[in-house]
Image 1 (cartoon, rainbow, N blue to C red):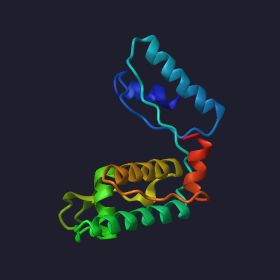
Image 2: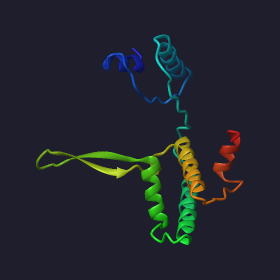
Image 3: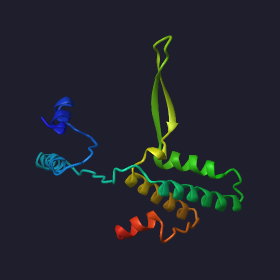
Length: 164
């Protein structure tokens, strides 16, 4: 039984969401088979997200930090002195990436506790990092902060390859 059918069986045939790393044509056929069956059974719209799964690059990380600094300079110049680059980073991660819980178990009592932290951008893959940077740039534009994207940057090259 393939993994998608296993999920269907485990959850009573209703599969609301799943994520799959596609590494072969067979994996692609598996997903397209799921989509085909979904629509054949009268299912509604599906949301498909395709990203390059390699770890985000140092170039992407560096450009994120340039963006945080530029937004900080813009807001501080507008009298918002609390908007340091670190404050910008935390606020944008809160707004765009959200929070995640990590469960810890107290070794003495066995009690389980969730500690909530902002999601880390270091865990993003290349495609997710690209999307995150685009969201940062869009947010910056929405407040009137125009960030120059270097023509030779990895981000600009990726945008041009997507005709965006």
